[in-house]
Length: 144
Image 1 (cartoon, rainbow, N blue to C red):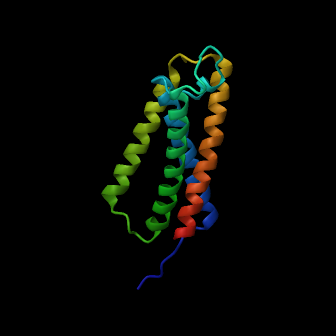
Image 2 (tube, helix red, strand yellow):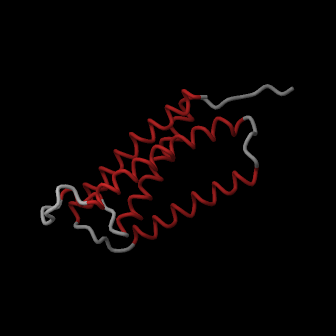
């Protein structure tokens, strides 16, 4: 029997955080293209307390960051022992590439959000994605 090897915990945590942050930023860019932007939190021209689009974007970015970190950490733990079939691995890589390509295409177009609000929204999405990706990866590592 071959001895089971494991990735170092810090390597899994770092890779899962990077993956979760990239997915959260991709969802932020795609959501901003469709009107779900965090920039609505800093606008004074709306008469609502918190615009619904900003609240949905906040929860969507947090969910994607957490689940991206969690699933990446879980997959990296099981990938070393060969528990992931080759076709599933190829499918996950293709989905990740397509999501990031879509976010790149959305980011290359002119932004509908004013500049200062867009920068603040991007930084908020980055921080939220990083915190939630860390939490997801940490929970996956504690579970395993």
